[in-house]
Image (tube, rainbow, N blue to C red; front, side):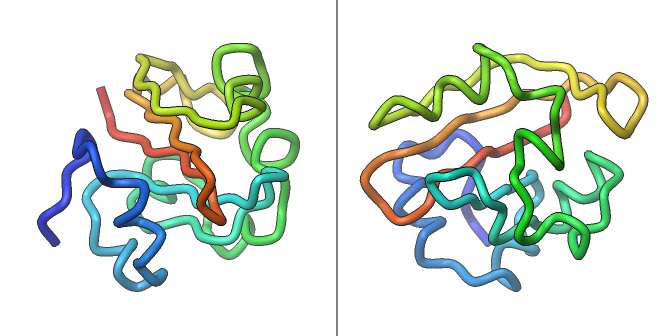
Length: 119
């Protein structure tokens, strides 16, 4: 699949992809509803986070999956109507501290996304 973490139009592109197609990406993808409920969690994200994706669907990402992101730098950003921000981060919840780059994406589409690649 020819889509990169940095592509400008990736949010709308992601909205059109099913879970199998998301699994083909080489970076992590968390698809959430606007109330932060996980509806898709791709294979790359599962490897980065150490969480089996079957244990993530239907759960609140910031409260139940990755409480290490429940802060002003990440979770609070999704309160805005539109977000497209990339920042260095360290995951600390399940895995050893892991340096990553995360990209927060939200607009008027049905879903919002958190993309992850290893730093």
